[in-house]
Image (cartoon, rainbow, N blue to C red):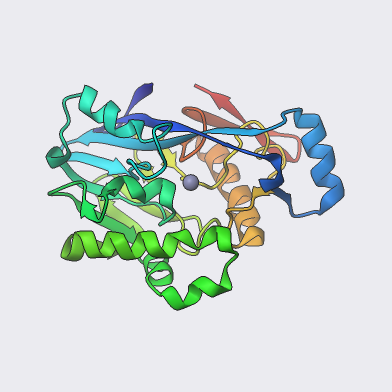
Length: 272
Ligand SMILES: [Zn+2]
């Protein structure tokens, strides 16, 4: 499954890598147990079921991916982004570069096949703050066990791509595309803003995971947020700015392309 929209010089396609299912235990609330229970009751779902997405950008500079899915690392239920590329007759050697949003496994393991680089030519551009954090294995002990896999994935990625992996700062990364810091979900978590003729597209990665719950209550997060308080702040700021600027948004786990509208003290996401 995929859908394509045009923003400026880029045709942007959402590639669905698969579906991730998890128990509600992963849901956290900055306000504690009581608001969490109320919010989940009102939401009414008994499990988390979210897409895992990456994006293909076709533009004047060739083929760019934003993130790369899970490849073969998370079993046959995922990894379908590779199939989606193959169906478009896009072989791995045609990908020119990958803009990485952050170094969590579901965004970068698709860049690897075992210990090898899956993309033979591509440059891998990684937000410098995330790279500095996850390249330092001594920090792993400071995180809960469920968040430590990113250190091993980062080490494998660096070994496989060598000089082709480069840290990037915030700001312009290529014509019409800007790296936007959205720290919190991970230390250097970054979105990519694609300029459009009228409105831009913000690919905001894991700024939020539950598009029908967190916009209305940004205090809700998932246990994967490395700095939960900062993630709440970033979530609010990103929703506010997207609504103000009229940006289209999509990301690593939402179910399509959306606009963001104010609703009461918070926001809602409206599927395009
Ligand atoms: Zn993710």
